[in-house]
Image (cartoon, rainbow, N blue to C red):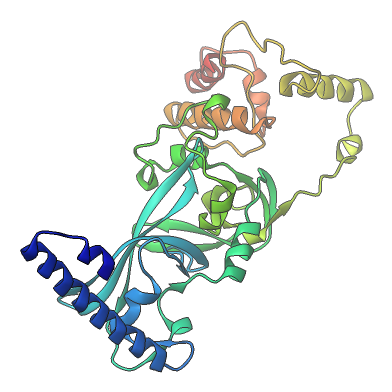
Length: 342
């Protein structure tokens, strides 16, 4: 650095640059001395910037369920407000939005403390190589999952923890549509049934550790959308022979299986379900709606999900829709009309 200062020919600029270099060297020598005198694994509040500078990867709790995750530091500063002084970091992580990986910015802070503190006891701390590898390995590509544990929903009053052991559908796009007020990717437009949109804005595999420890989905048992911990997700153990135990005539069984295979494309290509576009979707789900309008809205949402999940719709007590229309029951006629339109 002194050699660079000596290469400047203009005397005033040269003197100013040499003075600046002397100050920087003197100041950082003092910082290095302070750091060297600290007990191993501890840090002082004024020196936090040294262990978590810009571009550093840090670890800390998720804001919803407090499970640990990784962030990358974009900037830092010491601030002061009504609650006192704090070391503030602006950082980011990545999250799957249903069509691409999106950068999510966050702000984290450590309030001022007087004595030395163990680095591991801070609100967040530098990410170790071992933890980076562990976080990287948790990322997977499951869609139809079995879940064991609690999941979390984000409410205006805070986080709610629910029991969610059972089948789960990982579906970020469905979550965004069902919960528009909780959509944090307002600048990312999800594309319905557009496989070509998947993967846009992708990240390198070396950045997988910057993904959160949870992902959005739907609990088929709790019938609720929420965030599910990836570590609690696992493959579904399908009961391959359960359909054979269904008590119906064998001819009916064969017809049902053929219809499902054709509908889901198992036979090679999906045939036209109806001359009217938009019919033929389905989902294993209880259908609710106290009015015709409510039923139509709910049915539309369910069929949209069914298309995405490639599910078969089972309607409880559907025989009402097979009855002949009558002039005396206008409400039931309206319900039948809803299904015909869909």
